[in-house]
Amino acid sequence: MIYRSMTNLHHEPNMTMNKEAEVFMKCLICESRNVLKVYSHFPGYIEGTDFEIYECEKCDAQFVSIEHLDYSIYDIIYSDETIPGYYRYIDYLKEIKHKKNPLRYISREESSYYPIDNYLADKRNLDVLEVGCGYGYLTYSIHALGHNVVGIDISEKAIFSAKKHFGDYFQVVELKDYKTDRKYDLIIATELIEHLANPSGFISDCANLLKVDGKIILTTRNKDYYDRKSVWKTDLPPVHTVWLSKNSFMHMADGKGLKCKFVDYTDYVGKKENKLASYLYMKWTSNKIPKPIVDKENKVNRGKSEIYLRKVIKTVIYFAPIRYLCSYINRFLTKEHDTLGVILSRKE
Image 1 (tube, helix red, strand yellow):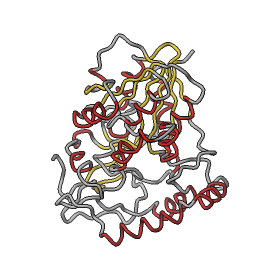
Image 2 (image 1 turned 30 degrees about the vertical axis):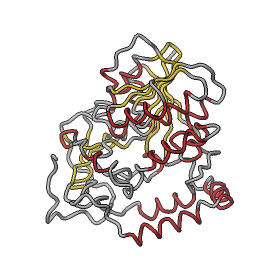
Image 3 (image 1 turned 60 degrees about the vertical axis):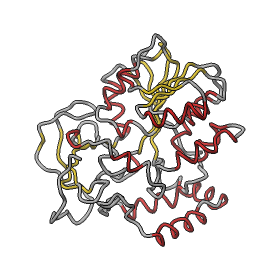
């Protein structure tokens, strides 16, 4: 892996940005050269790794240098069910075919699927492409609604599983190498853009496959949800390579002849989220330095007792009446949601 050692490094006392001299590099989002290094030796996903965090003064995007990317980290993530977040995809794979409305089911499970469920509610027979489809459960959910859908992913293992469970409408291919004569009414990529080395090029590739009135729906971690001085409140690098705001997307879209619309999450109350608890936790941890998720032996950096305590707490705060009450109270504290839903389309 291409990382620097963190041995004997001294971190700043908190997560507040400490802007340094201008860096002679282009922003990964808007290609501006108004880029500053805002944090040195930021902890990586794996213990003993660190990264430099940069921010573009023009579009607000934070990103890491693509020289330090090593995607073999996903072999670790998907091989351990105790690693936070990612193993839930296996659960969806197992459960989705037993649901009457698969898309509604996963949209209630987590916020990243809400924009797609909301957009497709009154649509019929669309040509749809899902990029980064993984195990294929979202592609299947859209197919179950009667849409003509294709799912693509670079993981042979994921696509093999998707075909085995759902059928032969999946391909192992990267978007830039995807060859087709088709144009699409809708292209979707949930929680994908933050993993990419070239987000701007990805948007261009999506736009080239759109019909004239087609739409692109993306979801990612919302930088606007956090204090403007916060640094990298998203998955640790190199799992996530960029952290984006609405301003980031507006600059990226404008440079490609696209316009953006942002999804309103005010009325969304997911089964596995408590908006008020999330907001208060975000405020409490806003200046805390994160710890690596896995140690040098690729084991989760949490004891079993801590994992059990988290499950107990979540059981309480996810209780439906509590969730809905907290969601109502949260409206008075923030209009933002931790997930940013973006709808891109061509300018008229």
